[in-house]
Amino acid sequence: MHVNSFLKRHLSSFLIAGIIFFSVAFLFMKNDRELDPDYQKNWWTLAFSTLPTSENSSFIITNHTQTDRFTYTLKNGSVILETQEVRVPKGASRIIQPEYITEELDVIYPQDRREISAWPTDSPENIFSIYQK
Image (cartoon, rainbow, N blue to C red; front, side, top):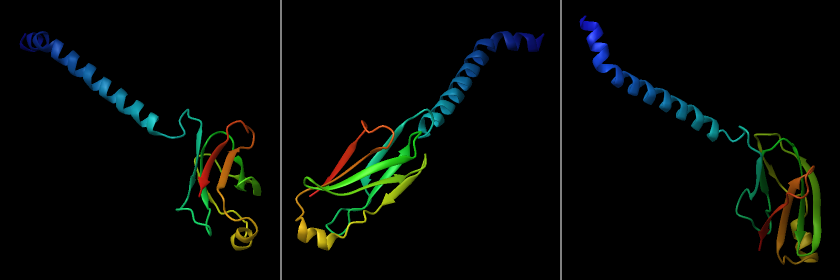
């Protein structure tokens, strides 16, 4: 009889503790999935890898999309200096060093405003640009 009365008296406490435990476990599991950059997400970034200078215009593409092919264009004002296609696997980042020769090009095309534009090769409407003065 003693066990039965103990359960009757504390049944609501056990139910509330169980609900709280399972709620917290569910929220932790959901939070881990949301913090995973690849879980049901489709995004990519374009940024300078270091502080840009006239000698160094390296940039980084971080990919969390289904595609692994990106195209970039490097412009000096309105003049296109370089266009390349690069591969960046899903979940990876790649530092890209443009292949142009800076000293010769700076004499031919004084640096107005360099622009690096990149986009997934299969969806050119998703274009992003970064600028270097």
